[in-house]
View 1 (cartoon, rainbow, N blue to C red):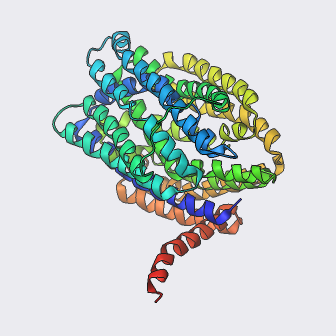
View 2 (cartoon, rainbow, N blue to C red; view 1 turned 180 degrees about the vertical axis):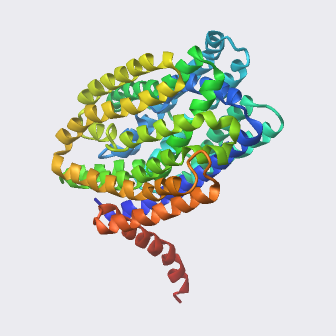
View 3 (cartoon, rainbow, N blue to C red; view 1 turned 90 degrees about the vertical axis):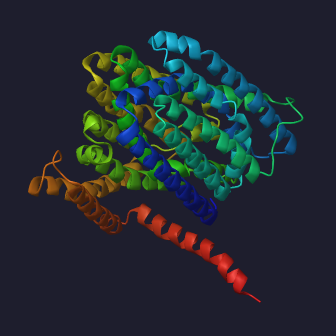
Length: 493
């Protein structure tokens, strides 16, 4: 694996993720605090969840095909672009037509315009998929950073502007529309114009094979991700959906902030390792160490800070989301324990085995939701943690079988990350016992405990010789070198 190039790409991906997260976080904070009620957020969340059940199919495996293909010729690229546009525009049309039955099913006419705006935004998606995939293939995460940050900024401007004007849930829908439009414009600019003309469908069998697997995976993942909001909306109501969406959104945003940005970096990097015929077990364990070493402490910290965090950020009317946030943040600990669980099986040609496990995973998720939903939204949140534990049992043996790493090495990494996680939250837990409890803890107590936790986490990483500590030092060195190189070049005569 080209370590320096991968670390530099990961650094750019993190810059993009942190900036996008900051913009999204500020937007959600301002909207929830002053302009959007739990009911309005619930209305948008139901519409968004219903549309994305289908819209997640739009990629059709094109990104994986482009980033994973051994010999990507111009003809293959043109064929991938043609498949992407034809399939994605069909899905966009289906999404638009589904707006009316969705509104009818939930018995809320306010949902129709919100659903129509969201579904119409997916017309832009296919013209940005291929340019972004090409950036990932060549590890050009500077361009991808510009695309994602621009898209987040467009969402922020549109959503805040319309929310201030009193448009409620519709403001969130137009924010999503602006985000997709900006992603299209910037990706085309960075690629100097990539269009699917002339259309080409010759020799499309390889991408159709990946697309079928990807579509099955997208449907299952979409059901797992969106079923809670759809079920809560139908059985309980919009307010409950809004509270659940606020808690799940915060937990998921944090997970993506600390680890999600670099997922796209590792897929083409593992392709390079595979193409050279080198074993994948050792580099995969380094990725596991990086994910768990940074994500577990952050997510555990969010669970520990749930009450003061929700009160400080969103106010009293959102406090019922705090207990949900605890369970959902703990559930995310499970989902980062086995990174690339869906990507690497496709890269290694183990798609049928992966699909079988994905179907079992989806069935388990739906069954747990059905059992929990009649008892209220907190039990729905608890069911996500139970599903996370089941998820690990489904995928851990599979990943070991295809990557050939040892259980002992994996457990050693988990143990080190778990100890670092405990070290990170001990100062917060001690402050609750020695100062105010979580319900009464103020901003200064929360910040002080968090800062002390970060210090304890770093010391523990160093003391345990956790692989993440070395990776952080090397990444900072690579980034410093990359930023200083242009300056030295300009200084030369």
